[in-house]
Image 1 (cartoon, rainbow, N blue to C red):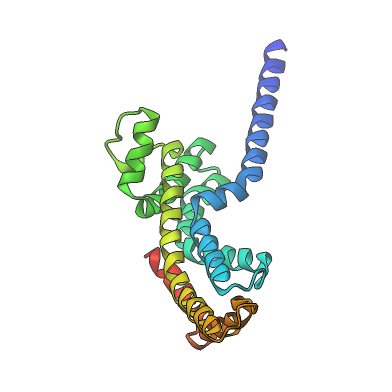
Image 2 (cartoon, helix red, strand yellow):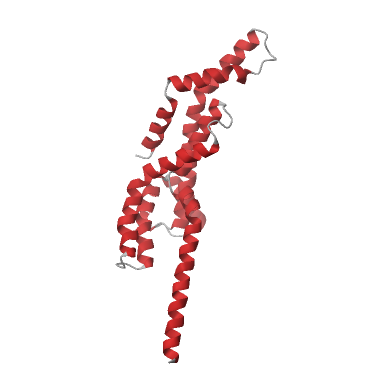
Length: 219
């Protein structure tokens, strides 16, 4: 009788532990989505575009985040599909254990992140963590791969943001020079340049170009 009660208590404890792990993972999903997917690069580039235009909060933060979120889903859909077919569905059907499901889910995510991570950034965190260099790239621990992936994403996002800034910065220079030559130093250049920057952005179909560029950087 005591053995049965012990087994039941052990089983109950394991179930509670699984529930606790599941709740922890669910709570961390927003952070995981931001740090291990294309979201970081997209939202930084879109923020650069808005700042370059000088439209302050137009489009609002909610719109920027919404666009970044749906572009992330679009870009990550092959990876998410692979995770669903190789990890989530087999686990729900009882074909694999929870640990196997996590391992199967790691492979597509690691593959995606490794494609976007510079070797220099990866070597940096391998050296900082003082671990042996993995024989295979997929053997790299997530604690090393994720920060290397993040700084690689920020580097690319800032490079693209710089290129976005250049034409709008040129307009600001031209407008400021014209105003100074006309002696209108009391007129804020941003008030005059803003309509021209918006007009340029619309004429070149800016949102199309930015979206196309973002998606192609992940191919």
